[in-house]
Amino acid sequence: MITTELVFVRHGQAQCNADGLVGGPRTCTGLTNLGYAQAEQAARRLATEHLKKPFDVIYTGPRIRLVQTGEIIAQTLQIPVHHDDRLDGPVHGDADGRPWDAVKTAADGGPHAHPDTPWANGSDTWNGFLERAGRNLSQLIEENHGKRVVFAAHGETVITAHTLLLGIPIGSPSGFTHNHASITRWQHHRNRLGQTRWMLDRHNDTEHLSLLTPEPTP
View 1: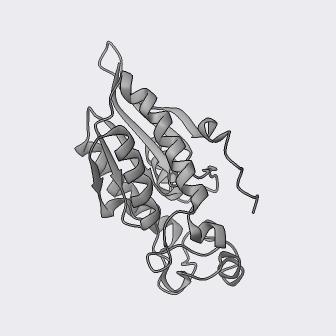
View 2 (view 1 turned 180 degrees about the vertical axis):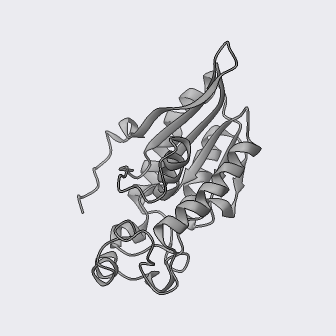
């Protein structure tokens, strides 16, 4: 028996993604035209499920690309959208708005490369972000026990969910791919003996994007 279901939809392509810029709060200007189309396709796919087994609520973080993605899904499914700062992405500090290539070169790699070291002045560390985001996501899961919940999320939130629910040690060198507007689903199961566990139903599912123009490979 599935008691709780969590569906993570990574935001559609944002202008900062297309421009190769670090998309912190100062730099995120929202989705590109392709990003809107991606979010609409994800919403249509979820709408097919929603007719059979309704979702209860959508959560979105504060950055514009998440808000726009969440509102597209909420309007399509006709369910409430909650804006929650606990779903915010990493703090980028002075890297906000700079080209990712330059930031990674200066830091000798991206955030994952040296997980206990900030990648820019005033930024998070990768492990520090995972710890904070994991606590926040745990709270949201507890508050929504027994519901079907959609999260319009950063890719880093998808990684947080996997780290939390798979019990991966903070600082593990392994990682996960996460395409724009991909769907990832976690289900909380309880068997007839009352035993429970989280199960990953799908990760980075992009079937609904097959008819759209593919994004260029970085």
